[in-house]
Image (cartoon, rainbow, N blue to C red; front, side):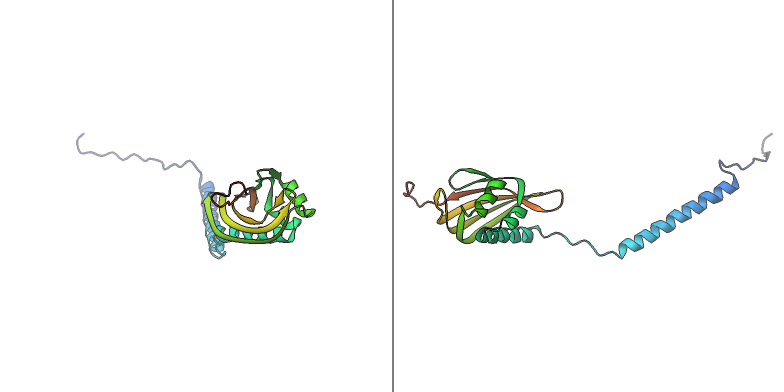
Length: 180
């Protein structure tokens, strides 16, 4: 039987009957139409503005300076994280509550603050700020007038707000004036 082809009728079968195939085709068409509509709507949305973290931190540093000068406990409370801790120029620890109490009672009185030589270093959701501060003021521990270097640490909280979590200040002493 060379060269003889036998054609047997082969039924064309699909896993879905004709009615079900039409329903699936309509579903696919609806999904594609929805995808097109969503992309058109999304394309019409304004682009999210890239966050300018450097500018935000600069503004927060100024807000801290003003809150300190005005003894504004509400503004200071908004800047500080609940677990805030400070190491003062005298080496004592202060919590957020103690810092706010010192401002409220004016135990710490700052008449003047000038900031210079500020540097910001970003590490993901953490920012280290170092600066030189010239200060005129007083505390129960003594005169606070002089020049200080400080480090302030900001962390971006889950609500998207920068909060101060740590602060440390060191008095700048002139060479040979360690006892002064």
